[in-house]
Structures are given as structure tokens and as C-alpha cells.
Image (cartoon, rainbow, N blue to C red; front, side, top):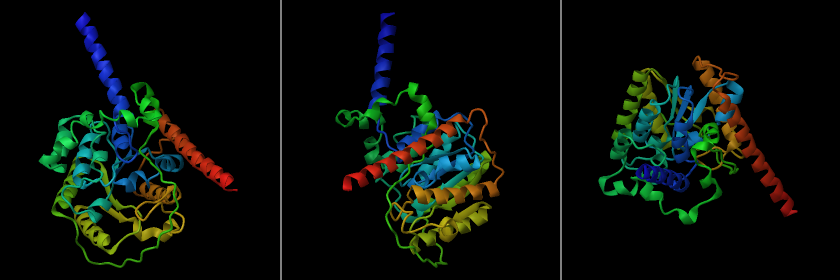
Length: 341
């Protein structure tokens, strides 16, 4: 009896410590970890890829305007081989009708091992054979234990703890369910509108093409519709070469590819107001893009309007959550203006 009590105390202590100390981040870790708190088989559209997803795709707008139950399941600078194992993970819990995969990373980054933001794409995933397989293709053997096991990475965060670190327990499950991956940017940084006319094709590395084709095959096997896309940003001619190659692959595989950089004007993107930086839209630009994307998805696929349906209340709460973030930003801006007067 005493041993059982000690074991339960040990388990509880480890759970509390790991919940408090684990790294939290709205650029991959929270998106990955948040998947496990979503109602099973509730997500109709899974948005995947890099930060171009969780910074640009406003899941609250998609719900409020179109009734699309979407989730931003992405990580900063996520390569396609990690996206493939993300797919393997998500199908354990969800059966989305549509997968939307952004292809900015294979267009821009060419290394077979991409370390700058790799922790964002690892630390939120539960331990499993799938996680080990993902790491085997993502991390060189000499660097493996820099990222695994996760607890060895974050056990020394004691001096960095903040208030939010103490709101990460199973009894906060409602708040976790309300999070749908969206992490908006609020800065306005003027950009120069690119004028790209590039008809050539090329740029996918051998490893990227291998995993793109594995993703295409796997989504077909699972019965989900796959949409390949490039979310809008300040495009370069080199990136466009890769998108042209992707378009050719998509056509041969009978799937959809859309380069939304070709629709700046239709979205009414304002390059003086709608960008956080050259690579990301801000909240207002993201609203324009998300509206355009939502209209495209509804027109292209027979998506259910889930508004008002039982089991989807967390999407209503998600709308309130994003509205509060907007209000907090606006209040902060008003405070800055008052201080400047």
C-alpha cells in the first residue's frame, strides 16, 4: 500500500513538473501539443506547413464566416519530411476531409537537415514510434540527444517560468481545446509588391520531392483531399521556380495546387498595411487571405457548415479568444498613443 502511494505521488510529481517546465510556444509546439486536446474526428480541414499557416490562416474567421472546423497544425520552417510524420500523427485522432499543405519551406530552404526551428516541430509531439521515425529523418545522429528526450531539454527552465506555465494542466482542458493553432502577428511593416514572371521549373530537393510524393500517396490512401498551396508573402523568382515544379507534380497526381501569390489583387492585399514582415501577413492581411481561402475551400469541396452543431462549441469559444487578442492589441495601442501625448 505504501509503495503504491509512493508510486502515485511520484507520477503526480513528474506530471506537475513536466507540465510546468515544458517549453510553450505559439510557433509549433503549442500547435502540435494542441492537437491532442481537440475532440476526436471533429476537424474537417487540417492546415499544415510552416509559420505561413499558423500566422496567416485565421481559423476563427473560417469558422465565423464559413462554418469551417479548421485547425492550424504547423511549425516554424517545417520541412516536408516532418509534415509527413505530422500526418501520421494526426490520423490517429482525426479524419479530415481536406488537408491544406503550404509549400514555402521546400521552395526557400534546401538543406536535408533544417535545425533553426526544429525544436518547434518536435517538442509538442507525444512519445511514440512515429516520433522516433520523424526524428530519424530530421536529425543527424550526432545531434539526436540535443532534442530527445524532451524532458532533458526543458528541465532547467526554472528561472524562465512565467504565469502561463502554471496553466498547462489537464484541468485546463477547455482552454486548450479552444486553441486552434492560430497565432496572429500585429505589426504593420510596409513591403514592396513583387512582380514575378517566371516560367521555368525546378528547385525541389531530392528529399523534399520524395516526401511530397509520400504525402500525396498517404492522403490518397486515407481518403482526404489534398490541397497544395503557397500562402501570400513577398515572393522571389527562385521560389516561383519551385512552385512551378510543384504545379507540374500536382497536375500529374490529379491534385490541387494554388499559388496564392498570383492573387494579391483579388485578395485586395495592401503591401503598405497588411504585412508583418516580408514572409508573413499580419492579422489584417491574414483576415483577407483567410476569407479568400475559405471561399475557395467552400466552392471547391462539399464542406459541412458546423456552426450550431453539438460538439463544436470550442470553435465559438475560439472566436471569442481571438477577438480578445485583437481587443488587447487595440487597448495597448491606445495606451501608447495616450502616453505619447
